[in-house]
Amino acid sequence: MEWTDERFKVYQQLMKEIQAVDFVLVELNLYLDTHPNDQQAVEQYNDYVRQSAALKSRFQSMFGPLYGFGNSYTTCPWSWKEAPWPWQV
Amino acid sequence: MYTYRKAYRPFVSPNDPCPPMWVKTYETPPQLYLGFQPYGMPQFPPMEALRWGTLWPALFAPYSNPYKQKRMGGYRWNGQMNGSRYTNS
Image 1 (cartoon, chains in turn purple, blue):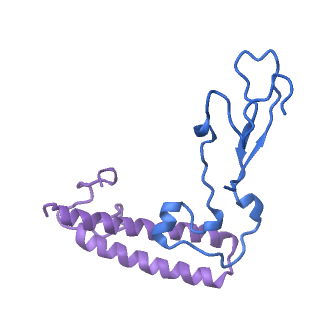
Image 2: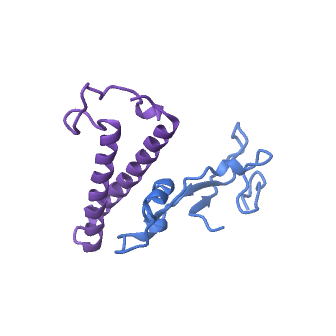
């Protein structure tokens, strides 16, 4: 799959969205550590977990595995080590 | 502009080899005043939260560099520039 500018833009946009959703999950996780029975935050957390899973599956269907070592399906040929790497994006 | 930065005047000895620092400041982030985080605080949207570095605007605490506004060697803190060598007024 060769890289076009437009495809790389989609890659970056999706990556940014995943990053934003994951950051919210981190914040909520830390918040829920000290507020375990905050019902509204728990619902929000679960919403974002669904959202993050959806974003990641979409990303992986278009650009191959995000994580290695059993955390995401792979393509054939094995493309986990292919570019671009995080610092190249 | 209200900031969380507080200042104090360190002791300046006449024997100090280097030019004295009359005023030193330190950052007091909001969580010191907040104590236990209340439920249902207003939140940033995910993209904004990523940029601001926190999910809750109330907890945003920029660790700004006080020495950026240093002029003519002296450190300026709300107007007072340098005390005389002994009196720090």
